Amino acid sequence: MHVRFTLLMLLLAGAGKVSAAQQPPPPVPTPVEVGVWFNGIHSIDVLDGSFGAEFYLWWISPDPDFHPFETLQVLNGRQWTSRAVSRRQLDDGNYHYSGNVSVTVNHDWDLYYYPFDRQKLSIVIETPFTASEIRLIPNRRASVISEFVDVAGFDVVGFELAEHLENYQTDFGFRDSRGREFSRLTIELDLQRDRGRIVIAMLIGFLVANLIALLTYAIHVSMLGIRATMVASAIFGAVGNMYFLNSQVHPAAGSLLIDLFAVGSFTAILIALLNGIVVDRLFMWGRADVARRLNRSVFGVVLVASAVFYALAFHAATGGAS
Image (cartoon, rainbow, N blue to C red; front, side, top):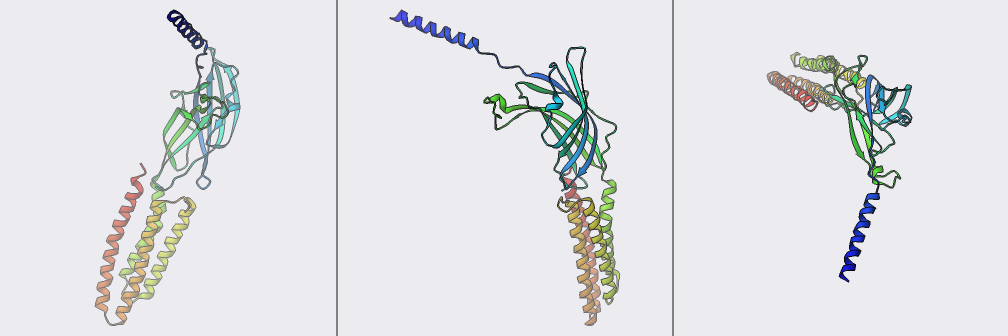
C-alpha cells in the first residue's frame, strides 16, 4: 500500500512538471525607439487653457506592419493631425517611420506668480498597444529643440523626453491584467517668462498712482479741492492700469503680484482722500497746527507702510516661482 501511494505521488508530481512546462512564457514587448525634433509652440490661450505645438516625430521598430501615425494618441490633446508621413527600412533591418504632428494640447496656465511664473508644457503620447506588446524607448540623444522655436514672452530652459508605465484602473476589455498597463511617452518643455519689461509695464500705472496720492500731502491742508482732483487722477491711473493688465492676464487666471499692488495702490489713494477731508475740517475749525501735524504723520506712516508692503509683495510673488 505504501509503495502504491509513493508511485501515485511521483506520477502527480511529474504531471505537474509537464503542465508547467507546457505553459507559454510571458510575451516579450517589442522595443520601439521614439525621437522628437520639436519645432514650434503657438496659439497660447490662457483662458481656453491650451497651446498649439508642432514637432517631427520618428519611430524605429522591427515590425514592417507597425503604423504608428494611424494609432497615435495624444492623451492630453484635443485634436491632432499628422502629415508628410513616411516609412523606410534602415540598414540594420529596422523600419523608420516619421511624420510631422500638429496638436492642440490642454494646459493649466497657472499665473499665480505672474510675471515670475514658470510653465511646464507636457505632451503625453501613447499607443493602443499594451506594455506587454510595445515599449516606447525615448531617444534622448537625438531629440532636440529646433532653432525655429520662439515662444513669445518666454525662454525655453528645459526639454525632456521620458517613458513611464501607466497602470489604469480598467483592463479595457482584455480580460487580462496585462490590459491595464501601457507604455507612455511624455514630451516636456520648461518655460521661464522673460519678465524684465513685463514687470515695468504692469506696475508703472500703480506706481504713478501711488506717487500722485503721496503728493497730495504736500498740498496745503486747506486746499481740499486740489487734493480731491489729484486723488481722482490717481484713481484714473490705477483703474487704467488694471484695464491694461486685464488684457494681459484675465482676472479669472489671477496673479498674486497684480492683486497685491492693486490693493496697495487703492488703499493708499483712499487714505490720501480721507486724510484730505479730515485735515480740511480741522483747518476750518481753527486747528491748523493739529491739521499740519496730522498731515505730516499720516504721510510718514503711508510712505513707510507702502515701501514695506510692496517689498513684501515682490517677495511673496517671487518666492514660489522658482
